[in-house]
Image (cartoon, rainbow, N blue to C red; front, side, top):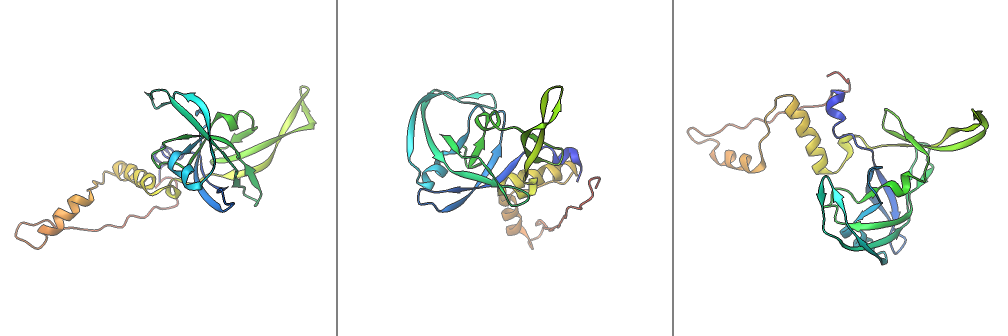
Length: 212
């Protein structure tokens, strides 16, 4: 797969672990988004968790150039964490604002978390949390060392519709035409009839090499 195609959908996402109101463990499909002004949780998902909801005044949200009218702001306190590479965990607990994320993500971790957590993201989409080391000074400032590393999900590890979008991008780049389920249904009805359509199924598998 070409890197330029892969990068279009290679967002920094994780499967976080969180607790419901009954201390049961659930998985949350989570986007790390430093461009988001706050941390958000999908409204339906929050209600399914059974967590107490508090009123937090009013808010006005803008997403991708769309400005929503002011509305009441509600929040839940969420206890959640993301598993690190070596089995330890990064805490992402805090107050999250309810917003209809249309089922795309369960959680969005925004500036609240990013602005208070020293971190960096490398070219392999790994999030490293940093600690200041005062024994290693540079121009009188402490050096920062990695204390925890978190591996982000790859494009093929997302939700179904996100995976579908990713592979549609791959097919388009390879000049492969895609047809909908409804078109397949119509074609199946006409298969075997004079002048009917013929259906071919092709299995295209991704090769591990970056330049194929």
